[in-house]
Length: 331
Image (cartoon, rainbow, N blue to C red; front, top):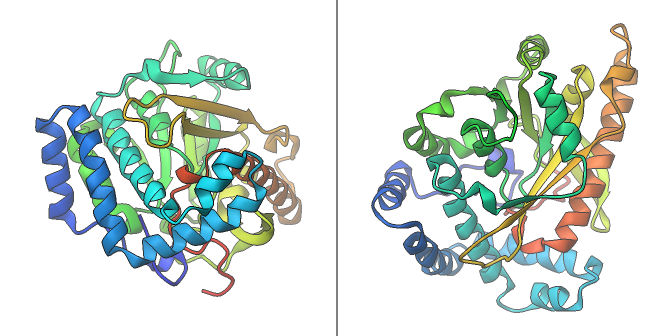
């Protein structure tokens, strides 16, 4: 959970240090998951008490989202004095579920696919056609990588995953995952190291029928100035240009995937997995397309993603775990 007054990519992870993370892993290994779920409530409460930044940015986001939420009960919850507490405890529970998915202890039968584009996604993967997946920090995207890593995709073959992650911000959590699951050594690209060599490398992975995944609601570390201003919850927000330009550069189907918990504070969580295939296919561009054409396509993909993200944020505002000023204009 990155937090602070500046842009998220310039902040340090606020996880309490590597040994604190090691202790969490120790608890995960010796206690039943139900105990960890119960502990998530007091842990979240302590974080709420001692982290002023988390409280501030949670409240700022929830108050901004509230006027756009149609459900009156959810709108009331967002405006409650204790809304940030609910938000932070929800994050604590999501962390337990991330550990579950990587440790092979999450019941993947509790993930419910919708009547959307999931069949096309599975068909592409079954036919060894690589796909570019754009996720977000809404809900629990670790379930997606956990599904693939533990061969739970429903596809008759193992699907390799290459994840583009900012390891600088989340290095402690990712070190913990490596200890929990040795298979975490699947393709990992540090977001700050993306360069001219990245596209050919990713195209090679996709040619093997794999998944390339990146979050679309953060700007790559150190590249915060390269962003797209897109209306989001009533005000222009700044989305990563790099993530969507990379999608436009690579000739593969683009999917947007969101995994949302059915109950924000449920101790027996079930998730709805939403899969949207973009109609804006990079395949429509020729190999010699100009940079201007690809920038135009990337902007269209970013706008499509932002509309979906806003829609799901209105539905599950307490599950968007970006605890910083997403609308910050200066970095």
